[in-house]
Length: 355
Image (tube, rainbow, N blue to C red; front, side, top):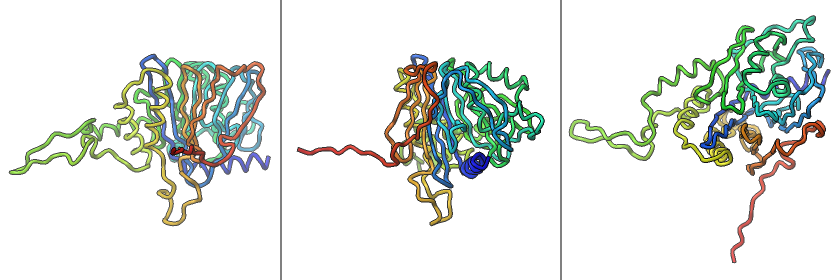
């Protein structure tokens, strides 16, 4: 019990500083990709990948103990977890369903925990684990959650989240719980960040209707002519700070102007390049001289190919991209396992020999 509480508290402390950004792209061959960053400006987050086989018996935490809803994995899963192995922040199952959680402070609010309903209680930070092990499509998730057979509660009042849910067809929805009521939104812009709510972010995009790719046109002013001072002047006014509304706008415009690549792998690389623009430098979220000793507030970046069932990731300590191919895993025979994202927290580099 003590370890559970410490894990939830650590997750709560970590999630308060999260500034995650999610995007999605589709390749010319139909491959569908979901990508995201995960930030933690307050502390170095323990990161790990988890492999869940079919038939694995699992149980949700409640705010009181590890005594919530029990469930058995129907599908094999690879998940990237934060702080505790049960807290999958981003993952995919063998059917191509992918889910991720994003910090949603001050706007999201769940149903209260009720002790006599604990057997149907699902902790918010384990919802990804449950969705990924149980369902193959977005429709299946929506049907199950709207049935009300499970009661989603917060494991900590400070760690409120919302979710991105996508499947291999390319459909993606955002799920938010406000005052205990579940809302699903079709995500046609392919972007998610944090607070405020998703509909607010969509409305806010209208404030940037003047932005366009390329350069602004020269304009006469009295006897002078105003001209762009450099390339990309059509995006002058695009917000560049790390707040969720600014990141949402920036991600939406970067995604909308990104050229479509030929296949899934090329699109994976494109996602990594786009998300490089959302790395949060360590120091900007702290008073001068008070930043923790970490290489970056962006602790890891993941790109998941839902069509080809591959998970790619890199970390703040090791920018080399690593890949887990779900098609090579026999989820009937494999054992449940957990491994750190970085075996060694050290950036490798390649020496160039001059002859």
